[in-house]
Image 1: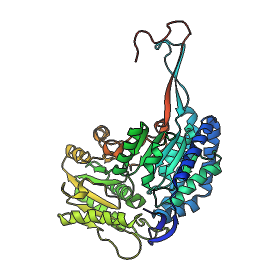
Image 2: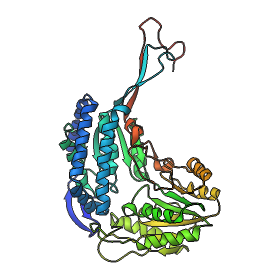
Image 3: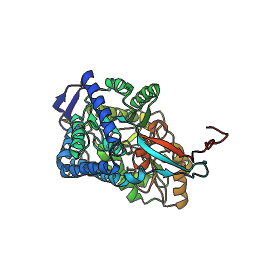
Image 4: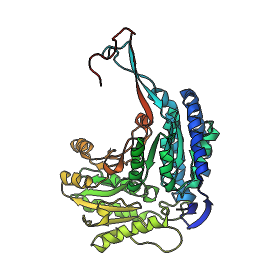
Length: 470
């Protein structure tokens, strides 16, 4: 795939880039390794000042940066501006909370026969980040902010269709004051990832992307015995029970399905509705979806812009067509529009069956599948009946059902009576084929730290751990 900016609203190629040579890659890794040796010896307070400076730059350059993202991958301008602001918020969160997250944790010294014992969190080195195009700034920032604050350095292999956003990120951290090489964008194709991750100076990797990409990264890292964090997408359930506020559920469902033009890993995709309220919810939901305005993502009145690529749009339509060919019913949308740009209308499909692709596959566009269920147990069975387990929603005002959903939904995130989203304060990640490890919060910062045990004794002979080892 060429490294290029192609405007999804027009299909026009605006700018192309040459992939880096092997020599350029080696030089970038060397700079990242040298920067790590410098960064790990700086104070948390100094790194916090640099990260706060990055937040200030993001705020000052919000409109320009948002316009760049919209041009490269088609999200609405309003959504792009919100993404820039969210990144600035995350920078300030880690700048303010890293001292607490990275502080030594005292242990019970007497219990371990020590004069003093504690856990220390230390950085491990350069980390390779392989990132997708759908949230081209936020996906990177939720790794970069905690990693840099911990004292690691970053090597970014971004998606090939957002090269200008990728280069902006490198420039952002440089201008904020981080040492040269602390964060480097590698303009390379996926064929270079094995070589980069196999380099002994690169100590770990994080990837947000497809299952095949995750398997490839995990295989390389396993061979090299290196830590990985994987976030591999999802087919998130949105369960609606009889006690739910249907108007609120339908309104949030529309946003949850069509945010980012429907191209979000944690977008609600499968709407599992109890039969007692199915017809009422379906009517409200389809009406709201049909009312969304599709158009130029730079227009303030646009709700849904184009999909990021022609191939992505064709895949979404193929999934809908497969369901229709096998008897599914389209309540709204479902037709691929003519004209320039890779647009697809908000679509609601019902009467789905297990043999249809939409039943369990992730649909990466503004397409919702409606599933009718007759009980709580059936709702859980359908919700958990995929290989994914990233986010999940449940709508119920029954306290007992709320507690059951929190336990029974097989996902890394459970949101009840609200839309699944990510916050710097909360861990983010999945289970099953949605990946492993966590981003954000203290958990995300510590993924790429050496959790080091420090045991200090009195110095007398035999003052170790005693007769038992390990």
